Image 1 (tube, rainbow, N blue to C red):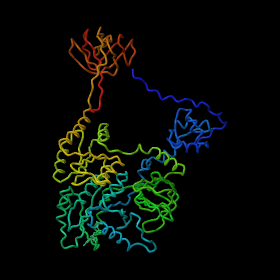
Image 2 (image 1 turned 135 degrees about the vertical axis):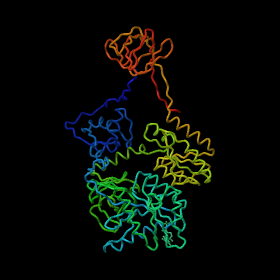
Image 3 (image 1 turned 30 degrees about the vertical axis):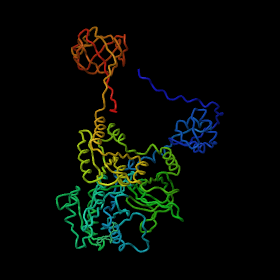
Image 4 (image 1 turned 45 degrees about the vertical axis):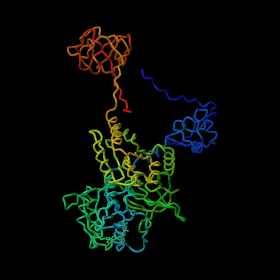
Length: 600
Ligand code: GDP
């Protein structure tokens, strides 16, 4: 019999104080610190700790206790604990509560990526300028980390920090801000290492790409060569039958910008970007800084819903009430609909870029949510070790093994790529997210975190900052210098993963004494369990003179007309098998159970 685990016994609070006549309700989150609970029930934390100790729970003042423990303790103070429903509701994604009928299209959010000096900053400025001319007087343009421009009555939001480092760092924090990526390639210089890196980062994020063939004003510009080079990296331009739009521009001279915007709108339309402006807001922090006079200031990109002045919000572990919303044009707004970047004032602390902002119904909900988060922290971290990935594959959470490969020279990169590609099996696809020669960089770690990928270093090292980042983010780097060793190790894990070792366990035997015809189709074997036990859910192997004649599941297991789950040795029982009734006297029924065991 399987033993039932009983909950750890907790002692009754020994010297519970006399219960006050009135019992007040207090909302308690799923986890709460002793200090905060003491505050809620107007008790001294020391007193509360004593009560906990009597109940067998050792907790220091800043330690968290669960709802149930809290609920068991606070009646002594005249309170009854109720779960924080409000906080739970607020924690739910607003989309879940969204009414599809209220979905409206929203402006695309665009990030500019590309190799250094290919003109990202110049392009962002050029686009910003096209709007400046149309902008009404009065506002003072400010750099808040993102801006909105308008083209043919359609808004487009641009993130001001170009480059894939920022793009992937955000994604690693769970924030997918970008809808469309503009890949800037200088037509005179062509595809360069960071261009390739950008392509891989954007592909990993499954974000559509529009290529800006920049610097076409230069006499040595060769856009056709760039298109050919892009093909080698899986980007086939439209004119060659692909689906990538490439627009020739000169960021410096301001030519081709309209064409670029026009095409971004086309891609946005295809992507059917929607949001529900009637929900409470949810957004992403793009930038945050401490202003001497205004306190913490953050630029938030609204992803869904509408943020209003006066709203209570939670951003990571920070909370606040929206005092003011300021647009990139320096105007004060009352509210900010989806895809709007706004500077927000009113947070109690500095949030982090990449954090999600959520509007919540009340200050109390905000407090509870932050509290629950603080307590849960540490458990929420996503670690990317080979073992974790293997586990996720084993549990069916994913069928992909994502890899980032860095090696000493391009030749080894290719060799390693080929070797690991061959490791794909029917059940597990090996995906190579990014490869390059050189040391492992921070950018690789962010990409690994964002894509739940492992980093393989082949005959190469890791940059200091990247090592620290990998450690703090729990991204695993595996180093190898012999391909064979690498292949063997990964293969071993993958195989173990898809074919867990199945252990066959014989649980018992029963001898068939008589055969009873119940109907024409089914016969009951009247048996005596000779050793072990017979379980209702066992597989039965029918042995005749030592040879197996059948194996299959039990259809019914009975004792005295009663269905039973188990029959022990020395007992008699009736067995009906699901698809077998050709019993003979003296057959032996062997009860077997299969147990899957991890292959390590
Ligand atoms: P980033 O590093 O990608 O942000 O590149 P920048 O925007 O800083 O541009 C690098 C250099 O290229 C600057 O000197 C720009 O003036 C120049 N540049 C950018 N776009 C163009 C262009 O369309 N034509 C020419 N001739 N020069 C450009």
